[in-house]
Amino acid sequence: MDKKFWITKEPINPNDCIKKVVRNEAGAVNTFIGTVREYTDGKRTLFLEYQAYVPMAEKKLVQIGKEIEEKWEDADTSIVHRIGRLELTDIAVVIAVSTPHRTDAFEASRYAIERIKELVPIWKKEHWEDGTKWLGDQQEKTSYAANNPLKEGMRDD
Image 1 (spheres, helix red, strand yellow):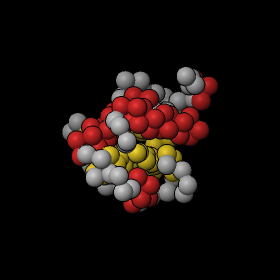
Image 2 (cartoon, helix red, strand yellow; image 1 turned 90 degrees about the horizontal axis):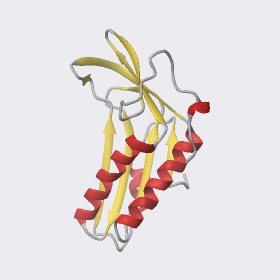
Image 3 (tube, one colour; image 1 turned 90 degrees about the vertical axis):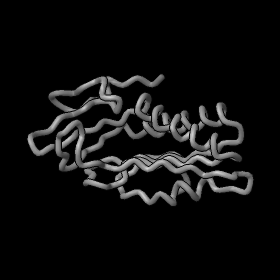
């Protein structure tokens, strides 16, 4: 994989992101790995289903990488997010950030996951023991009660 920012249907190997940011100038590589957890707000999750508008999602991941480069001097970032059906403990997202100093790597990783939830067109459907629900955007502010979102409703800004 030549890309540093991508969406995949395949299981994620965190080393794929890490290898893209390791370099001589970096004294720190921080890796965030988001996984599927069993309980959310007291409800038992059976599995998750992620969908994305892939071309726009990848474009927004690149944008996040550029924002990190602007905010943290000499930062290098790689991000991958998985879509499709994910079982408990499966990896949903990996963020790898390298910087000369550890504090910047930690802060940039935190920034990246918050921006992903805010900006990237990825939607999550939770499958619980007692039913399912499209949670909508990853900040869970926009719900899609009846079905998943449509590309026509998305903006390219």
